[in-house]
Amino acid sequence: AQKITQTQPGMFVQEKEAVTLDCTYDTSDQSYGLFWYKQPSSGEMIFLIYQGSYDEQNATEGRYSLNFQKARKSANLVISASQLGDSAMYFCAMREGMAGGSYIPTFGRGTSLIVHP
Amino acid sequence: EAGVTQFPSHSVIEKGQTVTLRCDPISGHDNLYWYRRVMGKEIKFLLHFVKESKQDESGMPNNRFLAERTGGTYSTLKVQPAELEDSGVYFCASSQGGTVYEQYFGPGTRLTVT
Image (cartoon, rainbow over all chains, first blue to last red; front, side, top):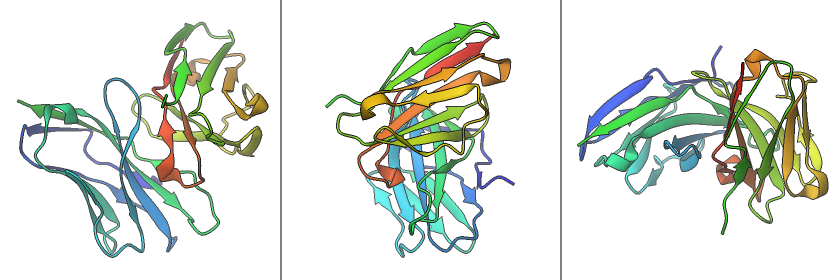
């Protein structure tokens, strides 16, 4: 079974509007971390935002926020005021076993976001 | 500060040939990771170096893949002999600490095996 599920292979949004990229995860660990990465056409993976399973508040980084709903096991990425430069592939990832465990993340298949002018 | 670099950016080889991918991590980063993404699928972890030692190589698909990190600086990933299913994008990442959100990724090497 997939540990990270991104159900939207592609998303379109109008410039300056907000967009939500979905991510659900599957783990039996109590301690884990959730991440989002952006991969523009240039290829590199850019870290965007991190949410720890024990963090009570949703993580925010500038225009990025992570809508963390622990009971539903979802960690959606919200991009506010979309810009043309936000067009890219977005990957959700999870790291389990933070307390002395593996630091290796599991990635989803990604969502391709296109921002229209 | 220079980021993680990978060479080549793209490689096209025939089945049965050998290919060597190179990754130069950010200077001073002890941790180096290799990942692979096959088209349309998840990014999969391959292995993790701490300096020159293999910390975790549980993701290496088979013994046709050999990774080295001599001297704890750059790393190479050799595929010998290459098979069609080896095609994909190979990413390298490095970090100073062990926590994954501090990993900095390179641009990847796109490998096409024909």
